[in-house]
Length: 415
Image (cartoon, rainbow, N blue to C red; front, top):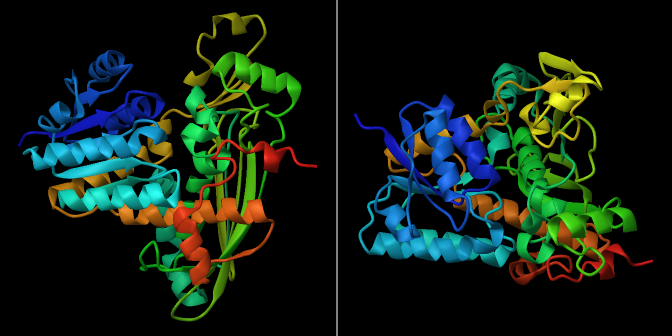
């Protein structure tokens, strides 16, 4: 049987990470890529990894005609245009079996709703790529604690964090193109993960109903003159004019619709973790039991002294977003598998072959977008937002944060 042919739209950082993940997935080839830049490099990288004879295509339509499923890994601001081209390709006869979109589904609720509406026109299965819900550590604790949860009751408190020193590319730093700052970029992970681990065993990912959210955002490092100037020089983004938050934290309250029990999910994210590289930390607490995940607890550590450091050519070869090439370093031998990328690809392909949505589909991505935007709204207004209020839900459909509008200075620099 021929391998499942996957096509990438976009050839940036996440595409390379996903290509690396394909080394751990059987029966799937990276068969093609379309991107405005970096396509040839990604194709060569794919071949060097042995994950497929990746061909460079000149358009989304051409790619769609030659693969079994496409994955949208392009920048946030290009998603709607790309999705429309996929719809056009399917209507023109492209025999796709599914469509993937990397988080976040939209920069606003309106964008996410538009993507869902376009996907429905294709009548194809969808997959929303939120890798942290697929992490083996998260799934293993669920399996290990399943019997305990049934006996003692579900978890009542979760904490999720993702922190690193900042994105790789300029558009990520630009709130008008990315959709915000670290809350849009990374809190979508932490919010989804916190919601998921609190969900009782055997229930769907959206089982718990959002009740309220309180949140804070701040510009703690990258708004200071020294770092603001550094950012402008390296990334071409001026935080004196259009700043985004580099820190976000908050608490969601959810309710079990069957028992009425309320549970809490805390999230914390930052772009100022100048330590050993990207850190993912998750924990859950239940009556008489708990779990904890820390991705910086690796079975491998290395030490590089000052003299030897000159030979270290790529500090990120040890750990994503690493900022050091010397000292005691954490090394993760297989980050793509650690973070859940391998498992989310396996899930999507297996489901697409059966003509059904992946475990997380576009509709789920829309719900996470609503939660992220609700956190922005709560932080902007300085209130605990009632998510059961129909008026608030209606406002969220057209809401665009001050930060995403390029007016973040009114919020982040106010006295």
